[in-house]
Amino acid sequence: MSHPHPLQAHVGVLRTRVGGAFPGSRAVFRGHDLHQDPTVRNLTWVELCAFGITGRRITRDQARVIETMWVWTSYPDARIWNNRVAALAGTTRSTPNLAISAAQAVSEATIYGRRNEYRALAFFRWAHQRMLAGATVEQAIDEHLRAGKRLAGYGRPLASDDERIAPTMALARELGLADGPHVRLCFEVDRALQAQGKPLRMNFGALTSAFGADFGFTPREYGMMHFPAFVGGMQPCYLEALDKPPGAVFPTPCDGVVYDGEPARDWPGAVR
Image (cartoon, rainbow, N blue to C red; front, side, top):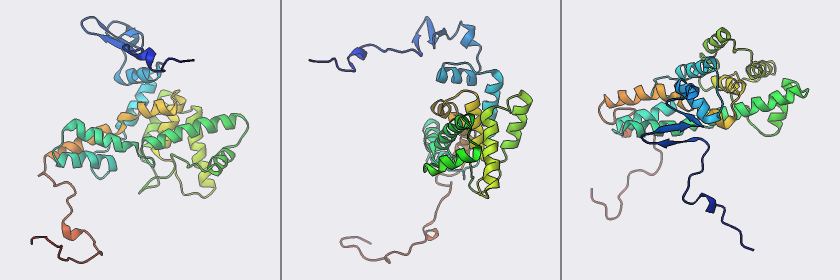
């Protein structure tokens, strides 16, 4: 008995639930007329992104917290790993889009980038359910670690404290968003780790992931939602590199390289 190829139903047609463009007429965004329907036409950029990713509306205050976290993560320092890529692209005279795209690609770093927040949000959602079932925060942490998993969102290179946490929580308290279950949990985990003598303080990745969980995002959704978080810091690094001579960003002279391999030697057929 023959079966139709699984791709056959998609040949010659785009089946979509997210929308479509009808040039000269209208554009549809998740079932709503983008230019006429107040459901979408009056959204802010952050709100529209959230609606596009999840199909759900977030509140304006939630959008403000998310956007503010983007602002407070935009550090124009070319020494930061992803900004360095943008700056190096500038020093080689790459185009703006290529530079920022490359910098964004390495922003998915496992230890302190998007993948870290993916795991942190997944942990908070799981741990919250375990605690609703009767586990303590210490038991949830122990179970997580015994399963061979890392505790994403705790520990930070170079500094133990994170300067972004206090102002973010101040804004969240002002907006009435500081007491969600996952935000409370991320601080409980921090206190539990300190009580156990573990040198892992909460970093901003934990807090932003906890807000993502409280706002109803899945790990995958929030990874997409938080995509622009570093862009504001990348662009100045790229532009400043353009203002310098080509190659002037982090140049390394030959005598700046420590080499302990074979000494200089003749290569057969080489011309000096």
